[in-house]
Image (cartoon, rainbow, N blue to C red; front, side, top):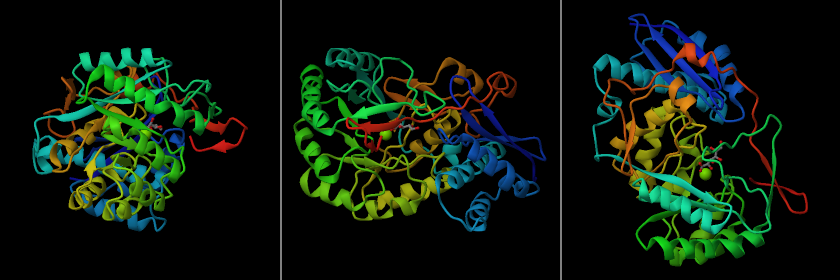
Length: 401
Ligand code: GCO
Ligand code: MG
């Protein structure tokens, strides 16, 4: 059996997605997510111009060899565009291998290590009362872990806080601008967690995403001030390139740390893991080289008691979510999976067999990943330019968002 064809499908059923579909000489197909939010067409061009021509005629069973071929062969290693393109190929090949074996992919990864994949949802609100209502709606639906984001008085538009039920970071063709004030944020956020704990008690798992906006000493102070509320994790407290900062934060607080949604390879996190500077690694299939490479990252993390907490925002397609769930179910050191439901349009374009039930996601039991792309439907939703926002301090200085 050989790879007979491969094509890139760019569509926008509510938001942009890039998907790679590989076809074999035996008529099997496999899909991989290649969506890099706000930079979609760069990955599409990388796949079309540099990857697809070398895939044709290769043996689809040789997943590891294909991974090495694309990684080492490019010479220019790592980086989000390259690693997202490699991830798409790798994911599609695992899908095909599952179909050949007649097994869901998690069986090929060693089988089930648990009965379901624990997930967390996103609660937020423009007032604390609105936030509490949002948390309650997750608790009613069975969620045992909820990410808490709240508006900060005096800051009008903060990324990640929205009244809309559908979360969309890439809202405009030209980046939208939000504003930020660290003093106002640090003064407000502990009182938000106090209210949530008061209302929902000590056992609901609470998370919070700082989205890279603090300096290490500010993050240390935040972690300390949140200790009474026993967070499951504080996410991306400082920009991810500044890894020494994590040591400083660690010296001051026992609030657990989660990092890695922007990481592309094991080299981005090996020090954080090896020095036990983090508690959860948030790398995910689509941006970290596919199932093959993410498994390698997770295995390294397991040695250092770092658990997984894969990114799962709506800009990762149902193809990525399907792949992530197979890995989540199989690895020994799974922690928690982010889950934000997609729009009905997206779900229709990507028919999938995973399902949510009572706080858990369950991957499809079909052979392969259990997800596909309806290309006829996808064609009805052409690509629309959409950028991620930028963030400025109140004095106009460009800041991390
Ligand atoms: C999260 C993330 C997302 C990202 C988004 C970027 O924790 O879910 O921070 O909100 O900002 O995926 O494309
Ligand atoms: Mg995040």
